[in-house]
Image 1 (tube, one colour):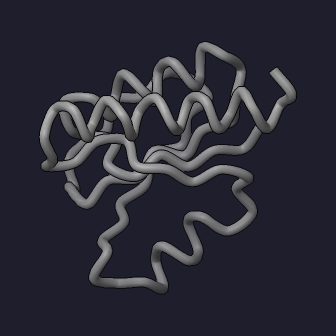
Image 2 (cartoon, helix red, strand yellow; image 1 turned 90 degrees about the horizontal axis):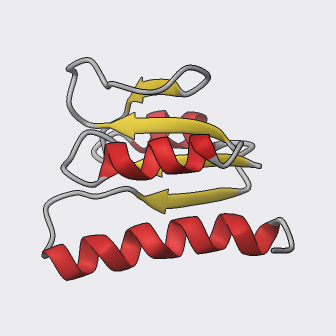
Image 3 (cartoon, one colour; image 1 turned 30 degrees about the horizontal axis):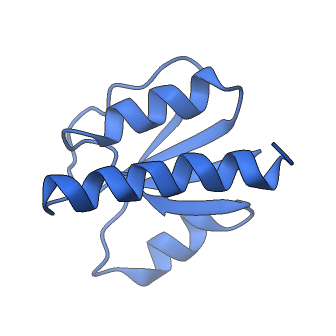
Length: 95
């Protein structure tokens, strides 16, 4: 499954990206920070800023699931976001 994870450089984002990749998904890791995004082999890392919607449109085109991978939210909200992204990917695959 082709997935995009927005917020891939926060505290939780890299864990989500690694888990989705481990499960065999094609993952695009998107971050607003222009630092190196540490990703596993096969994961595509890209800069994306919400203030530039054209970049996001291009980055998320052709993805079956797009979800938040972290960001500056409460720990509870981040964990719920992570769970929803992983569950969405499992559900779309029929399992």
